[in-house]
Length: 145
Figure 1 (cartoon, one colour):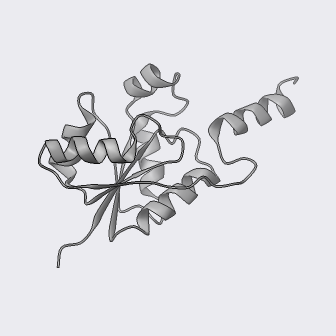
Figure 2 (spheres, one colour):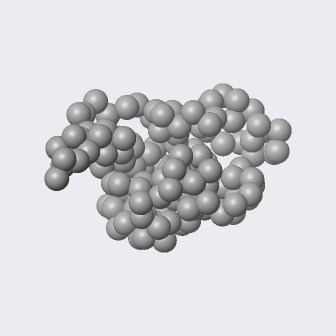
Figure 3 (cartoon, one colour):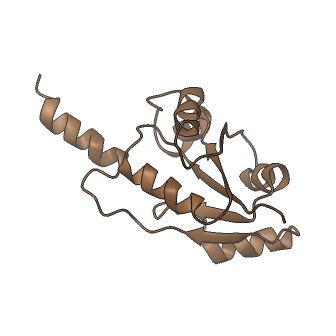
């Protein structure tokens, strides 16, 4: 019987409880979790200058218990890379990953000949479960020093 492979993607610049919640929930969807860590150029284009390099972020993510493999994403069409190389059965989207809507992404993948389930995972309701919240707290508590 084929193992059910799940793919999750993210920046993972400052690891926090929200990331752990996301990766645990993604891993529970299947037998194997492959995480694509955004490359530095993508982070710069979509968010900001990364605090930690992509290779270090991938190493940190790979060390987490729910993760079977972490790789740094490449430039180009993410769908080609994800679908053609990793061949997932499921793509897990974080609650705040709004680049794709699950049904639209499933339809686009089906057009390419790939049947992949896309699932949006719930938000962790915890005070410091996001990078921006952590940075804001650090600036508030330590910004005057």
